[in-house]
Amino acid sequence: MTSKVQITMTVEQACTMMKAMDFYMRIQMGQFEELEHMFIFFGEEAVTFNRKPEDREKLHVHLKWLKKFIYPDLEENAYWGITGKPCPERATLIYDIYKSMDNAISWFQHPDGGLTVNFDKPMHCYTKIPLPYVKVFEE
Image (cartoon, rainbow, N blue to C red; front, side):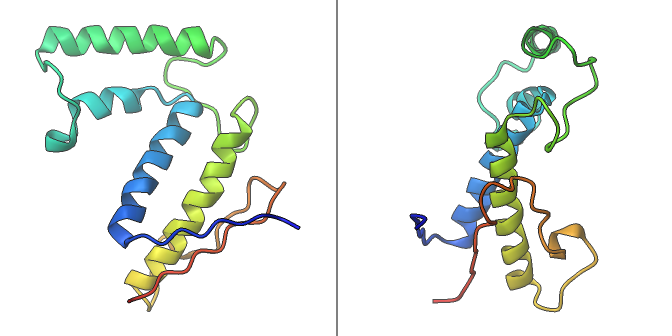
């Protein structure tokens, strides 16, 4: 028997959690520019950072070095696919959770559906366990 966890949260809380999950997946895939974006481009949501051009350039150079140090086989503008090696299985598992949440919230907010991929049934990437069940409802 598989143990289960049930979490009840608001849609806003779920969307915030999904942003964190998306960030984690991207870093695991080698998209280190997401760190740069987090510090520079997110306005009031940005982590406090001295935004002088020379400091932004230093950050960019250090992140390029860090990416090459962690993922020596990746080219500067490349990253691993979510289902490919050496992308960690945990990132693939989080991808499944993220896509399941995104799908359920999208259908809740737009019951008539839409043309974007978030209305498609989530692709099941981490096949060791089933996709999570996500239910969005009014209280």
